[in-house]
Length: 239
Image (cartoon, rainbow, N blue to C red):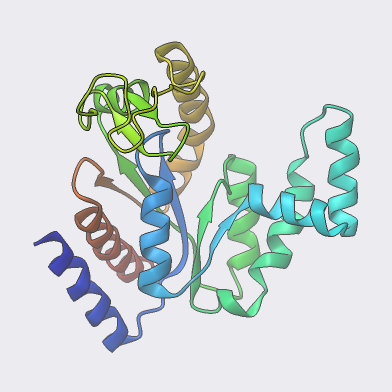
């Protein structure tokens, strides 16, 4: 049923040639934001724009912005908003962004959100923000239960997708390992940081009527279909 749902969405979107515009996809660690971004990229044919990817690309290509960022990082300092904004502005003017794009990791502060709104005011649809919500305890189980095979990289979860033999990969028989940061203590810290950064951005878009939340504790295709419907509804309200 879920696959039929997203297939129907793909057909309907193709028929109407819906332009989703700029979408800020939000989600706490472990909600599956990256998975959903890939679904939306396939559905709409728009790019996913990550500030981390932009930064790495500029540094690797040796652009003026990349060189400036590399010098700052070499000093152990954070890359300032102004530099990230310049990289974002260049990327948002590339041809593949005409119908829209999915923003990942930007804007992550109220200042960045205000800057982006100002840049898009005269030239594009406004940003709509969609947050994928999963209960805290469910997220904790997803993170702390993760184990992977060091040989074939198969991922298991001791709570929801355990191996047939405890601690051993079903395919390779190798001992499973857990990432050092997949602990409750690290997860709590990541959640605190995420909420502190994101709360002002959420309130910014909520106050403008351009924010909504979807239930992320469902099959992948159902979540994607829900995001599509939510973006369409938000677009109707912001037009």
